[in-house]
Image (cartoon, rainbow over all chains, first blue to last red; front, side):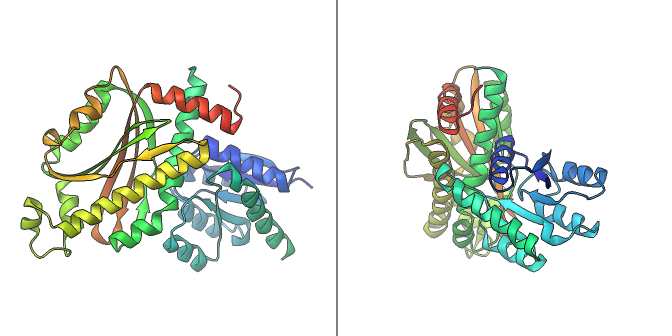
Length: 131
Length: 208
């Protein structure tokens, strides 16, 4: 069954990398893209929050990924369907994500890390699907 | 280079800034003893006149702290970390006994902190560019100055020797506990973008 993913990142390159990585573990995945938190929330509302997965960058045009995630949760999206996909490795951010109970996935910094990135995404999807 | 190629190259550079600072954010946090918040990067190819307009903020900021660091290799240019006077005061507040003294000649330990901050931030960005695009880039040691932008050693080379366009990358971060926002800028000659695009196209297998 195809899975509908909302990919929000201000970088076109990052969205491209993320879609490729998601397609590795979910070949039938379909995507909608947002380049800011605001656009992500608008798309989510327009789809009546029926996305299967919400993959949000942290450092993007407002609201940032954490604030976007909070708004999605308030709108009724299960938190397990949301992941923060970020290059930000701040321990403070990890603490914030932990407090919210939201999954945080590190982006690939180099092409060598792409398989690891695919693995991290696959673990997220598998973990939530198993619940 | 066509507009699409330029757009994707600038986008990859912006993401490199993001990934680079994100990679070293805990080190920045440790050096400044504060939580660090990153802001959205901006990358543009701007006419020299626009870059000059941008530096007016630095010229208008009064005395400020500048840390410069050069890099060279597959691409070359200059990185500049900038704290305005007020931000400098915020940053140094509590670290030194008398902020007035420190603004005249701030102490070696604080200078060392700023040099470390710049070195780590620039290294993070260079690491991301090197990893992402397979570039070989060497960084020189940074040097720190407190004063007016126009008096800054080598400030002219940031923009003065360039021709009509400048590749300008900037990302700022806030040192939260000091309420101090640093701006990290990279000034590079216009031909850098063409060279970067060749690496981007090869490394990331982008067909444009």
